[in-house]
Image 1 (cartoon, rainbow, N blue to C red):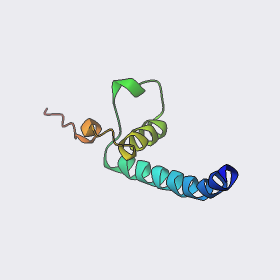
Image 2 (cartoon, rainbow, N blue to C red; image 1 turned 90 degrees about the vertical axis):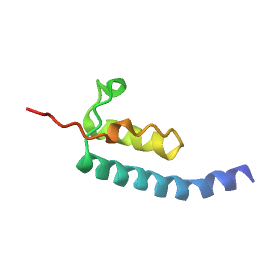
Image 3 (cartoon, rainbow, N blue to C red; image 1 turned 90 degrees about the horizontal axis):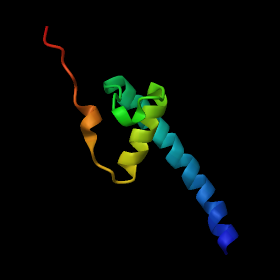
Image 4 (tube, rainbow, N blue to C red; image 1 turned 180 degrees about the vertical axis):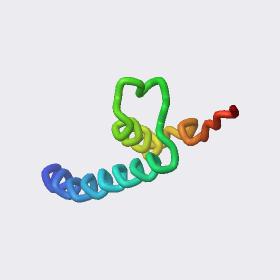
Length: 71
């Protein structure tokens, strides 16, 4: 039974990972994640991790704030 559940989860995890990647690409177009905790990673990895955190319920959408440079 456990093997059956793991086998069934493969399809869900594939679909879930595709959605995470697609939403992270959308967030990359809207605004790049410049959070200090992801400073050593590239922009794509930053957005994937942020999107994964959002999908798991960690709602701190500070990365979506658009910074404007008033010159």
